[in-house]
Amino acid sequence: MRPAWHADPPVPPAAVGSGLVTAPKTSLVPPAEAVPPVRHPDAPAPGEPIGSHYDQCFGCGSGQPHGLQLAARAGDGVNVTAEFTVRPEHQGAPGLAHGGVLATALDDTLGSLNWLMHVISVTGRLETDFLRPVPVDTVLHLDAEVTAVHGRKIYCTATGRIGGPEGPVAVRADAVFIEVKIEHFVNNGRPEEIQAAMSDPDQVRRARAFEVNP
Ligand SMILES: CCCCC/C=C\C/C=C\C/C=C\C/C=C\CCCC(=O)SCCNC(=O)CCNC(=O)[C@H](O)C(C)(C)COP(=O)(O)OP(=O)(O)OC[C@H]1O[C@@H](n2cnc3c(N)ncnc32)[C@H](O)[C@@H]1OP(=O)(O)O
Figure 1 (cartoon, rainbow, N blue to C red):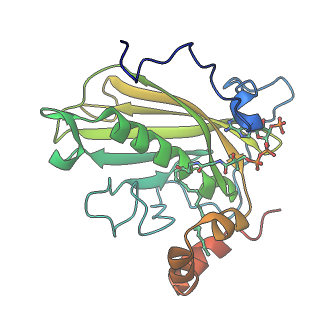
Figure 2: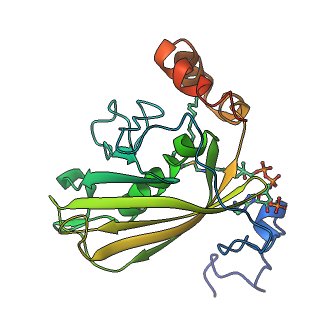
């Protein structure tokens, strides 16, 4: 007799309801009608630290002891640089950074481009290439830039180098971020954290920085 777990006949997969799951993926190559990004007049000056958008952010928040504590600085275009030191808590294999952690470093660096355009956006697609292993204690030198904008879609790219800011590329990513309103967070975040964020004057000031967007 066949064991109970042996399905007969094979069951077809359930229909997926979400349009996003069944829709073709947005290309990471900007369409011909895309326009170059514009540096906002109130963007941080070149070299200025950008600071964290949220102190509990796993990527850049100072309130996350196991987080990446990423420190980004504005570039002179619509670009940023950042450093991340791989710590033992970031391992995937013995002595090596976890790939997901490296993807987080790229993602968060790309997220800090929001401050250069004064647009709030979230990651829609992130495609990552892992080119070299990254040992614990390595400083990952990141840079990210917006390449084009099309409607709410922000096309951007990031690299992470090891052995110095001009060292070999260990990881890279292409991404599409999607512009959202502050309500995206207020309506979707867990109420406890949203309440705490809204009662924190520093957090409110950071969110307000995005309100004026000519
Ligand atoms: C007071 C409280 C304050 C709290 C907040 C504090 C500070 C705020 C300031 C800054 C913080 C901002 C960001 C954080 C920064 C860094 C962290 C690192 C980045 C992240 O870690 S962030 C988290 C991961 N991320 C998500 O959690 C997204 C989940 N997702 C969704 O929430 C929706 O899915 C959404 C909104 C993405 C889209 O939904 P939607 O309904 O608005 O979009 P819609 O369908 O209208 O599409 C419009 C056009 O975007 C294209 N499009 C849509 N989705 C796409 C996709 N996935 N890929 C490629 N293209 C896509 C369509 O194809 C169409 O294109 P077209 O116009 O050409 O037709």
